[in-house]
Image (cartoon, rainbow, N blue to C red; front, side, top):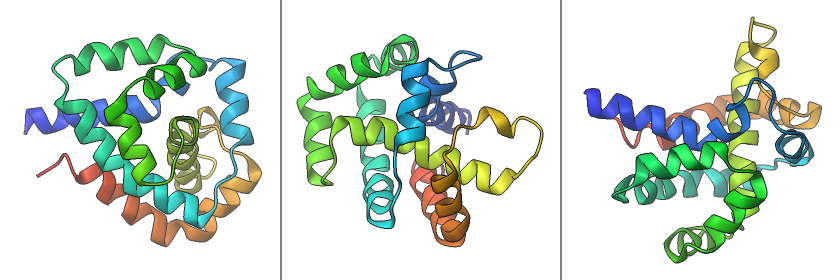
Amino acid sequence: MKRMAVLWCLLVSLAVGPVLAQSQPSAEQRQAVLAYKLTKPLADKLLAALPEMTRYVIAKPNFKEIAARSAKQSLNERIAQTEADPGAMAILKKHGLTAREYLVGVPALRMSIMRAQSGDAPGSDALIASADNLAFAKANLAELKPKLDAADGMARP
């Protein structure tokens, strides 16, 4: 059970951590998430790739180092690192995604869903979501939230 909790924390940190690693995300990270346009087909691709990418990263013997390093890298550095990883790129290509689409899209989708759920709750302003992505998440929350939970739950019993 403790291992599952660690894996869950890793999954969240890989998908959202780089954007929220600092109290204020970098201008580059914030702009990329705000400019990202979520659509139903794109969200479906992201949610399909998420469990595979998580399993792939977790299977690496140095996954803790990768997660820690990733949280400190710029978006462009993380994109370059992902593009240089044949295994990661094979998963992304299988799902019709680029490294940038995935590395910006997963946090954009996750934070839009979290923001749609939390409304104006304290701390929700730390969740970066464009008005369009927030509207998309609210309109599709009943379908997206269970899919996100299932993608995240792959590491849980």
